[in-house]
Length: 596
Image (cartoon, rainbow, N blue to C red; front, top):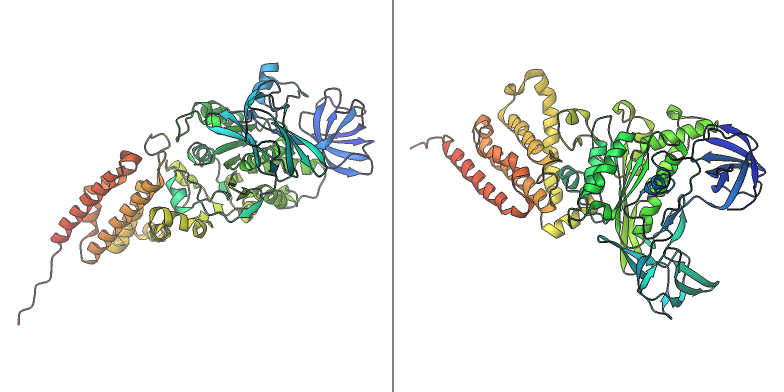
């Protein structure tokens, strides 16, 4: 930070401040205001007047106070020590800040993201004389038992390794390698900085083709998301957005989880901070926080820091992606982020458009979601960033601007239905309003790995649910008893799919997560049930006999009574079902043969 002031405060309007004497400043440059050194960011320049958005409370700031330039944009520190942290919207560690000042933090407190004193065990991966290029691994640090931190050659650096540190313990500021480039020698440390608003490029962007396995049957089978894809979870208050994102963070097969509490209520973020350290990684049994980073920016924190929080999170996600990891980023919620954008635009006296949002809202949403992606990060490594953003439309109105513009930039839309939520159906994902455009991309993965017509199974089940939705409109007028048996069977099978497949209990140790094998076998079993039942109804068996089958209860209970490691019990259930159907078939009266 320069020791002398560069400008002077001339105007204050909430989190927006103007300063004169800033002719040499640049757009998006980080500056510090007053002797408290409050962190601000330049968002507009006109001659020597800079318009600045403030990341902290501006109470007490007045004209005439000094402004100090930093000479660089807002950036986040990247290196060992990120995993397990709880950061604020601009990357400051909240747990360290609390230790320094207690629960109530004063303005202007500047704490580095990474501990400068802690030493990390570094193991070199290259030798002096080796030729390296961006993305190559120089060495590794075992950051947690679940995560190996890979120190890669930074973007724009290529050449011969002159010196590499021997195996040992080093702080994040110590040099671990020196590379001779065409422009001279370049030192590489365990830590680096990257501007949060600048996307880190992939070496080669590829089409997503591998699903993100979530363990939630309605998502994995009906509305899948590919690794490197983008999804939105819109829903009104109480529909279960936060709970669903907690489930995805806990059970998805991503290597690294980044959870951004973006403008959420303090009590919800408190639940996250209390629950996540107690959760276990389902694959290893270790604490989930050993591969998780939390970014907390609640609704009572400055709106400008909220606006920056999603960029801080996605920058960290790209950093781990470049190591060759699959990263899942949860943003809860992008509506609160959009409200921050709207407030800042209002302070800047910009022309509002839809519902007061600025005209550039779609561009900002695109800028965020398009940082998701899957591709090659080095010659022998692939990585991905998958973005899942919650949307909180006022009154559950999906036609409002944030939801509508978000649909333009995501390919998976998991619409939550408050009626399902109030009926205690979890996840409350509407099978009528939701969709996924990744089906054709990932179908070869499912069919190649499990040898099952996954695409045909899901389409058939969705068709039954769609027919049931149409029949419900008739049922509301004339009642179900007035329908022919074939249509009553559709209602019955759809109810079996909803209760026996789509519904899950997040608190049940068996049902809260399903392996892909169990998901497929459950759906195959229900479709086999529909095959046999439809055949008997066409032969004249009354549908009430099928509704009264003893095996029905076992079918509905299989999702929480049969664990993932005992799937052979599903085959036994199929045999039991067939035996009961065979017995019913024998009861169907046959027409007598006509004798000549």
